[in-house]
Amino acid sequence: MNELDKQTPMEETNAAPTSCEREATKVEGMTSDACVETESPAEAIAEVADTIEERTEAADSIEQKADLRRYHSMTPEQLVQALRDILAADEMTAHKDVQAIKQAYFLVKEKETKSLMEKFVEEGGAPEDFEAPADAEESELKALLADFRERRAAFLEKEENERKANLESKRKILEQLRAIAEDIDNINLKFSDFRKLQQEFKAIGDVPPGTENEIWRDYQEVEDLFYDRLNMNKDLRDLDFRKNYEVKRRLCDEAKSLTEAEDRLAAFRRLQAIHAEWRETGPVAREVRESLWEEFKAASTLINRRHQEFFEARKAEEKANEEKKTALCEEAEAIDMEAIATAKGWDEATAKILDIQKRWKEVGMATRKINNELMQRFRTYCDLFFSRKSAFFTRLKEQQSQAVNRKKDLVARAEALAEEENISKAVETVKKMRGEWKESGHVSSRISDTLWERFNKACDAVFERRRALDADRHAEEDANLAAKREIIEKVKQIPLDGDRNNAITEVRALQDEWSRIGFVPFRQKEKIYQEYKQACDAVYDAYKGRERQERARNFERRVKELKGDGNKLFSERERLLRAYDQKRGQLQTYENNMGFFNVKTSAGSTMLKELERKIAHIKEEMKELEDKISVLDNEPTSKD
Figure (spheres, rainbow, N blue to C red):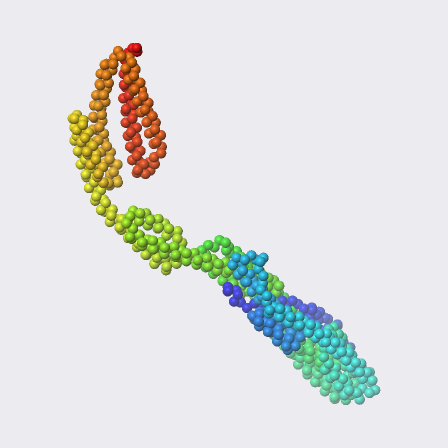
């Protein structure tokens, strides 16, 4: 539940000016001439009474709607029970309560259904496949509402019939009152009968709407006529007038005091009660009747005007509140939930939403329809925001759980490397695992720090083992380097003009010894090898040169021996050409094979160098064969 859900749903009262307020404006605009009466102010009093009755419903609506807001805080079970109670008490006048119960019930049910559908969709269901579960309470509610409608229709019909009967009764009494008032000869004798009929008339209940003012106007005319024609004891009549004047004077003063009341609604409601009492109070002396009525009417007009101003001010306030709430909706909707990808981002956005909700609570009501629309719009976005936030942190929790498991696995694997015999393999594995650690995901620092400490400790142990082995290996390599330097010096000391067999035998023995010596420091490897190769090549080249010269001299002697024998010279040349072609084929094969070696590896580099040496050797042999063929080509021959 987000912060907005903690608010109690409330309906607003959109108290627009009613017909009674329009009538009040009419009363306010009346001229003094319009209110002058010859006999009595009965007609004007009836008109104001009509205004008061029309405005009573609007004023009652304001308080009643405030009372009905409590239904929006009830549960569906409580709402159904409240409707049962109304029916059990046969409160057929509680139709506004019933309407509020119905509205509150379906708002709650709509929210519950929406929540169930969101859960259904989150669990993988399609929105169009969702079906709301059957609800026995809703069926009962609808049955109760139908029962209320039927019973209220009967109630209203009965009430209407009673009003019609009341109207007929009042008309009959008016006929009797008029007959007494018109019987001038016996009017004094009929005074008690007239007063009795007055009491009976006032005791009769409500009449149909639209006829009440007319019936009261007729009554006032008959009453004024009776008192005007009454030839009764002057003291008794003056006493009655004085009593009526005291009552109306008090009512007039109270109405005037209400013109300064701070609570304009309460003042307006009290004015309705004052007017009702004024109507029921008898006439006053003719000389004060008009002035007292004008004074009372002026106070009523001022109260009505202040009431109208109150509604206009509230309408302006509601418009301003509508603009504020619209701006708050737009401010909330401007938060791009799609762009929020971190917990910090969601926390910052949540702070903004809570601040907007706080400011929303501080804004008053707009007009009822617009306020409900804005409330629905704002609540929908807030619900969506907190729903997505909840889904994000659920996914984040799952991801962190997976990340913790991956890190624990890396820790276990790293600690297991302590027993790995192949330290090079262990080091490579540790390097790879450190990369995996970075990609394993984010977890809370409380858990991550502990796991990282174990992981780093295990990795350091592997590197420490390698450093210890490297120290021993470096010492061994330094010794191997010194041994190879001694062999190079021995090769350099071999005489280049001595016996070839002895020299070659000695070089090969030193080469065997060289190959048995282990690795040297990597940085010295190439340099020491080049020194070694140069020393060996110097011995081989020296004796190879002597051999080539010797072979050349032997070939020249052989050519001289074959001189004059064209067949043998030709056969020798053919043999040399075949040997040359064979060497050329070998050379082409070696050159083609060079493209298959990977010089980026140490093994590939070594084999490439060996292949290059063989190619160079074949080229030397081919050069020697070319020289021999050239010698034969320059020798004149005769072929038998």
